[in-house]
Amino acid sequence: MSRTVIRGGLVITASDEIHADVLIEDGRIAALAASGTPAAEAFTAERTIDATGKYVIPGGVDAHTHMELPFGGTFASDTFETGTRAAAWGGTTTIIDFAVQSVGHSLREGLDAWHAKAEGNCAVDYGFHMIVSDVNQETLKEMDLLIEEGVTSFKQFMAYPGVFYSDDGQILRAMQRSAENGGLIMMHAENGIAIDVLVEQALARGETDPRYHGEVRKALLEAEATHRAIKLAQVAGAPLYVVHVSATEAVAELARARDEGLPVFGETCPQYLFLSTDNLAEPDFEGAKYVCSTPLRPKEHQAALWRGLRTNDLQVVSTDHCPFCFTGQKELGRGDFSKIPNGLPGVENRMDLLHQAVLDGHISRRRWIEIACATPARMFGLYPKKGTIAPGADADVVIYDPHAEQVMSAETHHMNVDYSAYEGTRVTGRVETVLSRGEPVITEREYTGHAGHGVFTPRSTCQYLN
Image 1 (spheres, rainbow, N blue to C red):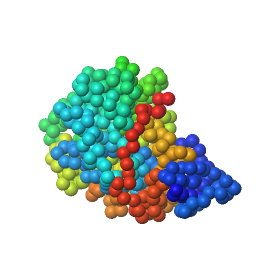
Image 2: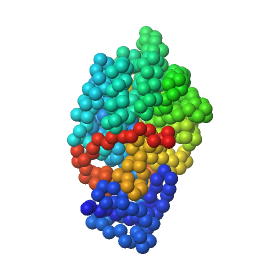
Image 3: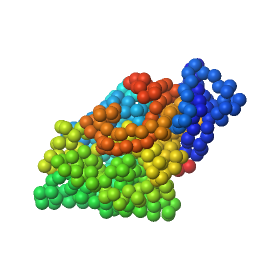
Image 4: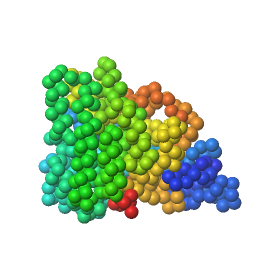
């Protein structure tokens, strides 16, 4: 039996803050006891970690990553090995990535391909959502089988006609199936048919720079698609999770639905909270670094996103980590913004940026843990194995120094990409030590993990509905 005790830290979960010692046995949390009490003094272990003056928090759960995703004639630059290592450096100990069904192929083929990419390569634990690109009778039956295997959420796209796009009928059929089998439909809500018209018109006018990517993917078209997805889910009697919400108008649609008592949930991402169209407009094609979909919005949208996180109209912050190098990948879109691969790196930055948001007064410490650890775990059937520090939970634990200062930079990050979306950003707070199932992956700012430690983690259905 291997035992570790973490002494003297402030343990922060979504519900509590307590100065406590944490006992870990065989990869799980065995007990907590208030620091300095006889119960805590009785903890014995081979390894002791001194967390005095530090936070002891659950490992982050990033419910939206795209390692090795094929997109626009290239691939996301992080592999499961490099991406999960970077996640660990950023205090994230579980990712949920997206397996992709190609049109004309089965869900099983797509899932098997992603298992092959990830197995034996991950530094931290991982699960999968399934992108459903081709809804038919066979696909619908396969959804039931995947749920039995612990792949309990299915993503559809109202954008990207000809690639991932599903029409309203296909979306309704998948939602009806998920209403029966307990699955959760995740929706990329943008009106892709209308957007393609605006793209064509912009290019015809000679508007080719990266900033036009944001101008054609209008906030109203995100709001319209969000509204339509909510109504389709309502018709199907199914819950709905809207990914990467970026705009005031889309938040308003979610809030209205939730006020009506509908099981509708929303996620946003750090890029929408901290970046804006100012970045997309950077000169000399630098704006290409910030091309993602949904796109960055004008700064005034940020207030609605922060408010949504405080009022729980938005429940989760994930990264949509989908990195493409500036050199050789983003550059594919020089002279035509529609050919810039869509995606930003961020899996390493999320926990630190959200801690900075605590210091800036946007959210509380417990809300930080709630939106980054506990709720994503509950939303996607991993709680309380993941997302909290409590007896029986996996010992995915981060020792976090709330006073350390750092400057985010491509020179010092561990993501396999040649730029940082947050280059030069100063934040206070930094990961010091990371345990994954009790094993040290980061030890006092040294990587001590290894590929293959992380294992596939089957999930139950959404626990946030209960």
